Length: 202
Image (tube, rainbow, N blue to C red; front, side, top):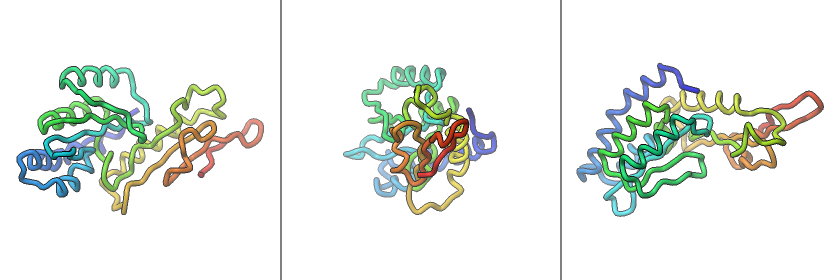
């Protein structure tokens, strides 16, 4: 699954803004509160003490593909990362990073179809889903194609909307374990009648 080349080029063209923000923050030329307004849109926030920062990684369709998993493992070793965790938004965060690490990781992620753009700030966040979507035995129907399409579309809009706050979209398949009803826009897979299933907005 991938986003369009046009969107990729747009994201690539925005990197210089992020780079300037990171360099300014670590040189103490940009105050932490001002860096939040820059770095947040690229998935990076200052950490307590303002001597390091974190980076949030988005995975389209809320799934990590094998080549991406290999990249993550290698990155943890390469950068000797001590603190990595999954978020409630089904992203991964790398913590206690220095400026050059963040910039290198951001570019490396991009080459592995992992997009940090829009994972913070007033943006369309990662489209989430039930953890076992696609393999749950009681799933009414496969929501994965819809999840993938929604993820690609959401990412394509990042940087083009003036949202007042972050906006979250989620899919659930069984017993609402994806917490779709807590999202700004949620979909719940339901079997309505024999031979007919649909996504219900919750």
